[in-house]
Length: 438
Image 1 (tube, rainbow, N blue to C red):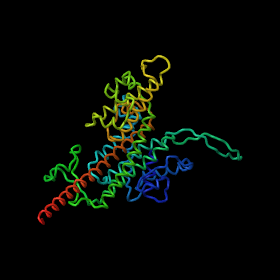
Image 2 (image 1 turned 90 degrees about the vertical axis):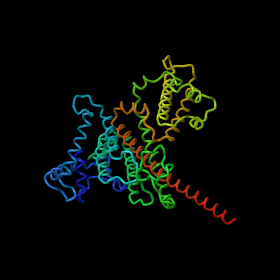
Image 3 (image 1 turned 120 degrees about the vertical axis):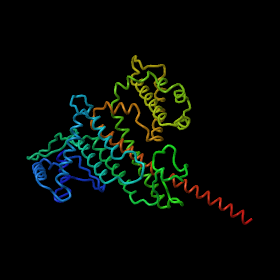
Image 4 (image 1 turned 90 degrees about the horizontal axis):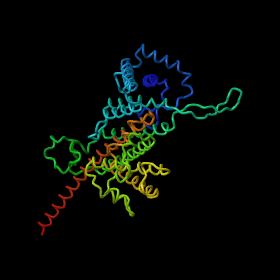
């Protein structure tokens, strides 16, 4: 970890030091190669010499000695907290390392992004802190490896198969993708730095505002203002394009998060808390609607009351619990078990497929809903550090993408209201002119 930090500073100050590899497809985004080169061991002494050199002298005008020391001290503090499992007393009452890392990613994202109320670039210091501290946390994944066979040729020309280590396959597949999604979101926010066609005002600064232009479910956000004639066609198309781009990021982050959560083992404590049958979990009304002969998931969801986030989350918890109950009954159908019932396995499988379809549609309809009881239980009891980092990173990117897309929709909504009022005024004036001519 110290080596990673030293490499970054060395790269900034000397073009001849090329030990850190950055992704070429993300401008300004640091991306350390996850598989070390074979030459890393050979130049270990050189790296240690560079570290000692940088400790005793100030290298370059842009990287003063105290900045390096400050970052090193901060990194030591962060990883000490992780090793202690957030129990700073050292009494051994800390959480699992996986949960500590998950909390670290979540808390970092909350301190950097918060709840995005405006479409504006991140402050340079916040952006730098996000990239720097996420790089520290992701460096843990460099050391989560698996054995794979590799062909090597000995000195006498004999071809041998040996086992070598590489980064675990799920991390190798998902971490670069998450870094790419991260870069797209930051770049999208940066594109709003020179925006002139819409702006924000507080409620106190906008006493003459038409109340209909502010959505009731977002009353705490700043108010979006657009010109009297609305946005230009170019600006409107650009916003639509950015909205679609962020929506693709949101879908990708949701897919990765769902995939990772599915790989985390369900805790026994959650299973013990489940009802014994799907009817008890869903309630009679929902259970009857799902188990009818003719079932339409879209019609079913349209009839549900989702007026508040609490109702959406409660319904999501019920559906996930019923899916798990039906799955366990099918897996334990041989022999007696307390989950048994008089329903045939074929019908139970049909009910499970229907419930999974409802759950998928619900997640698509309400992407910003809070985590379910099952998800929280998995995250808290998970002990796989690699899965914890993937889950937390994808979750915070999903949350950021949803916030950015919502803010874009706010601007388009304000523009739509302005266009509607303008068209209405034109029609009224046209009617008045017609009456005067007559």
